[in-house]
Length: 355
Image 1 (cartoon, rainbow, N blue to C red):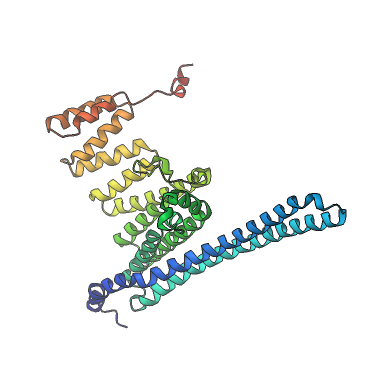
Image 2: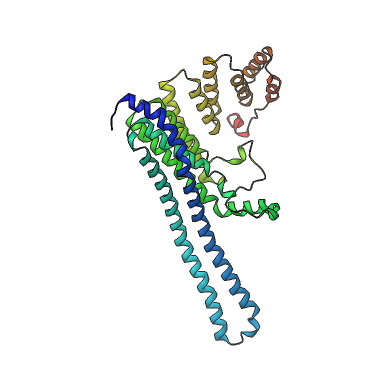
């Protein structure tokens, strides 16, 4: 192996695309194996559910014939033994399933690393491995709704089956995506450790944190959300909210590093504005949009967003100035902006200083 810059460039130009094209050979088998792991666990649950149901039905149907106390006790003990066996085996298989998912993730990362062995400790090595993890996470997005399929003549029941599939497997798919995106973050962290001042390393790490935070975001706040799709209530709990905030704050730290290195790059400030918006930090969001306008004075869309924020934060004078500017420039959304006038509402706590 040589560290020649020319040879690294040749690999990047020629073999990078080949590696990305080969991703399908790595990804598809892992998805199929992942589905098998999930289906096996469901079969265990269905088997015991059917067995317990049959035992209960048999017990209640023949209850009048079980005159002898001994026979009655045997039937009851058989039912309780089956239930106890199911609970014990279920706990074991839940742990085993988690281990299998982790093993799948590790196998995938190792196979990608092996394919990129020639680039080890080079920037492309970390970037391509991280991209592979992101691609697999993207491929299994929504898989929890699609694991089972009815035949065409039962297509009208697809929505019901999708709900059942999600109810059974949403956590497993979420866990797999979480592990893959954390592996992506680990690759970029290694990239940063080896190349601390490389902007691409910090940008990749920041984007990886953004993608991971997306796993914990409250889906009800997404405008383009498919309302017909059933979403587990656990996705709205406090644990998810805490994780979202923690990961989003890490993303902000990386974007701040990028801002220090590239203060005149509008993209960095746009990402910071989005992050502050997700964290409900409007004052910081306003500052970022103001910075973007200093760098790109003709950006009407950013000016519109800033005007909207001014009105929402009760800064009506500034909001009206933005409205007048947009109106003079014949911006098509100028009239929409004025509807945000009065959007700011004073909460009861704002009066406490007067009491």
